[in-house]
Amino acid sequence: MKVVNEFENIIKNGSITTLFQPIVNLIDGETIGYEALSRGPRNSIFSSPIELLKIAEQQNKTWELELLFRIKAIEKAQSIDRSKLLFLNVDPNIIRDDKFKKGFTKEFLRKYNISPECVIFEITERTAIEDYKSFTKVLKHYVDQGYKIAVDDVGAGYSGLKTITQTKPHYIKIDMELIRDIDRDLFKQALIKSLVDLANTTNTKLIAEGIETEEELQCLIKLGVYAGQGYFLQKPADTFLDICENIKDIINKYNDRSNGFFDCRNSHNYIGDVMEETITFDISTSCEKIKEYFDNHSVEGVCIVKNNYPVGLMMKNNLNSMLAKQYGFAVYSKRPIELTMDKSPLIVEYYTPINKVLEVAMARDDDKVYDNIIVTKGYNYGGIVSIRELVKYSNTLEKNYARELNPLTGLPGNAIINRVLSDTVKYNNNNNSYIFYFDLDNFKIYNDIYGFENGDNIIKLTADIIKNNIKTLFPFNSFVGHIGGDDFVAVVEDSRDDCETLCKNIILEFDQKVLDFFCEKDINNVYIESEGRNGKKTVFNLTSISIAGLYKNLYNFKDADSLAQHMSIIKKKVKKIPHSSYIIEK
Image 1 (cartoon, rainbow, N blue to C red):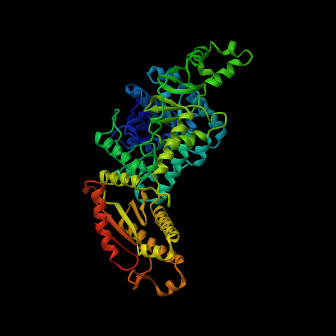
Image 2: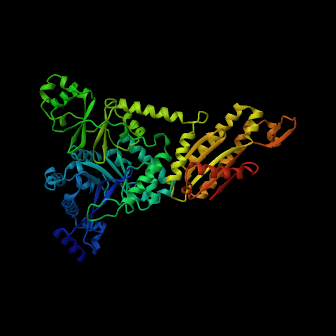
């Protein structure tokens, strides 16, 4: 009874504490918004929101408690930076309640100087959604008013793929259990990578919850997760805190590392590099004025904004087609562009890789595939990109990248390798980075006897073996390059045990498959003979592979050249060992 009385007093007196935890862009370290977290009175059994919700459900007062949560959060959010988003947790059963619709109006928000465009309804599935058809209809009601939707705790409880596909949210928040120790869990990495690909394809923003270590943060950045929150970034506070500068530095450092190290094709090539900062129009602008602008300027489309936030796109051909219809000009010319604009254009962040934007853009419906793309920087409008310019820029990147690939194996060549090694030396600060140098033994002799064509086939075989083994063991944190001839290099991040396994697997596969390139006599002899200029025959072992490895403290090298020189020393040691072998030195 005492517990019930305490709960009743909380409802009566509004004794709710609201904390705010920043949600951080994992590309540039900027805070994109805050999640409002509600608690009961400090130092009481209801300081945990879980206990509060339990008793509220028992007393049939979930609605009253959630209303109190929202009111207190909105009241306190009056001081939030208008460029930041406010994430509010809402149960599915509450958001479709008529009382919620009547209470959560634009007038209600205006009272606290907050715009619907700043509010994200974070659907927290404490209960299952039984009727998706009516639920999505309710969500559309709010989206049409400017609110956005996030699905919370994806990967836990009721928050599954069905909820995502049915609600088509603007944001997907990954449950913290999938984030915990992700840097050491290949299965979790593969799962998150698939969600990243889904988000990129569907123009959805992915947010990782519960980031608690630097290693988790680094892994999420490498996987391409858009944003994150958690104790490592910033703990919840009763005011709107930004993250510390040292955390921003860590995010920027790992982005630099990731861009140059893991994705050489798109290193530092963002959609922001292509965008054009064109004029925008407010949603209240008449169709007539925008047509006049189109008639006097050589542009394909314009961004429609509200409070400098993109809310729509108007393409020139669409506006002209609509106004050209019978009575079209009379009906729409004086009316606001809000009525005719595309309310769901493709909107991407400034630092989104160009190839990802192109992939999403070309996956749009046929009637929208050539529409402009809107670019935001932070919360505000940044610029606009035409498909023509995007394709042209992408083709240039592809041509430049192709020039830097080894023509025989298709692996990155020396220009890319040098950038990767420079970044490895510059940004490495952990003990799990490895450099591998691969070299074939007695390969020149093989070429002399069997010919260069067969030699090239062995080089291609070697490339495939190295690449496939590395990408199998380290799919998200590795690089393989072809220096030239029979020399290859690789960089990976993982434990020594896995790297030992890698070397053993490569040697085992190479020694088995290389025999296909020798005649039966040489295979039976387990050696090849070569006759020198003096007529004397010399015996050589069959072609084998030597692997030189180096790990830990790679930042001690001043540049890529000094690292390469040290690798050559290890290479000489391992090549002195007969047959295929490896050495990994600290």
